[in-house]
Structure formats: C-alpha cells, structure tokens
Image 1 (cartoon, rainbow, N blue to C red):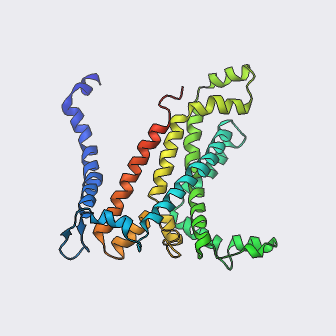
Image 2: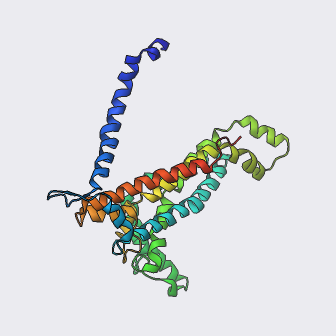
Image 3: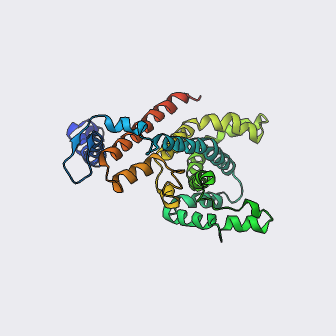
Length: 293
C-alpha cells in the first residue's frame, strides 16, 4: 500500500476520473454561465457582447425586483439558522441522550428529507387550501374562522406560508447530522461529568455543544447555502407570486431563462447566486472558532 501511495502514476490514475467529472459537470458549466452573463442573447439569434451590463441591470431594473428577491432569500436564510437549526439541535441532543424509542424518532424526523419535494409541495398546497385545507378547517372548527384566509394567494402571508414547509422539510436533515456528532463524543467524558454531579443541561451546554461546534458550523453553511439557492418548493407552491411576493433569485433566474429567453440576464443571476454563496460561506467560516476546544 505504501509503495502504491508513492507511485505518482497510480495517484494520477485514481484521481483523474474524479477530476474529469468535476471539470465536465461543474467547472465547464460555470465558465459557460459566466460567459453567457456577459452577452445579450435569447438562445436563438446571434449573441452580442455587452460586458457587465447584465450585472448592473440586476440592481437598476425596477421591473425585475432582484433586490427584493435577495431580501426574501436572506429572510429564509435567517429563519433556517435561527429557527430551523435550534429545533434540530434540541431534537438531536434529546435523542443523543438515549431516550426510549431513539431509533424510531430518528427515522420519523428524517422522513420529510427523503420525500420528493413535489409531493411535499402538493401536500402543503392541500394544507393551505382556502376551502378544504386542514389549516383553515382547524381554525374554523376552533372558532377562529376570522383567521382563515388564502395563505398562498395574498402578499401578506404568502412568504411565511411558503417558507414554513421549507424549514420543516430539512429539520430532520440537520438533526441527523448533529445527532451523529453528539453520539461520536466519547462516553468517558460524559461519565466523568456525571461523577462530578453535572446535570443533563450542564452536560449538553458545557460538553456536548463545544464538541459538536464543527458539525454545527457545517449545518449553518448548509442551511444558508440551501436558502440562497432555494427554488423547487417555492416554484411548486407559488411560482414566485403573488405579485412577486415570494420571488427569490433562483425563481427569477428560471423565469428569465426559460420564459423570457433572456439567457444573458438569467446567467448573471446564476453567477450572483454562486458568488453570494461563496462569500457567505467564507464569512461563516471566519465567524466560527477554528478550535472549539
């Protein structure tokens, strides 16, 4: 094995398939997208080079409302970090403590993650339906009929109504990551804390949490990036409506490329999403301590 690891030809042979896959599937499309973003092109006629005009248009075209779409994605990112992750963390710590039925609850919480987003979208559309939806039916049956409303059809409630199922869908995903990190902490540390008289809350706050900071940082990065590039569930529920109330950069990018055939403008949006994700990832990396111990 050591001889094989020193053989540069063998290393190249094993690395080359993965490198080719990365170049063809990821790097080439990224470069193409960056090139298209500098063009005025409808996908059919000859393109014309316009430089950075598409990027300037992102923040100057009032009809597009790209700035509002960015704000919506940042709201979702904030909800993911400050609502989704705390719930996932509490569930992970409770399950990792060895509660009865641990495996059962772990599986149940993870089910929404593996269910198709289309199915989840259709499910929540039924829940929000103004006539026979479960939410309005429950409100009417409890004497709160004045609160029943078309949740996805009005600007005041559409954004929150769209983000709630997105938050719900991936709580189990982050819970499982944090649960795995908590279970990997050495049992000797817990036993020593118990001998010293530490309570469950003290063990969680002063032992478990510091030990799982690297995984918590990973979850924050995943939550933020997933929010910034969110598309599928929003498109299924509202398609960015009503009146662009739930529009995010990815839905705007889709509509510009595949509906308006503005390939250059839509590609500029795609590049912006990529750069935004990279910058926020670097920021999160700097905000978290490098050595939690």
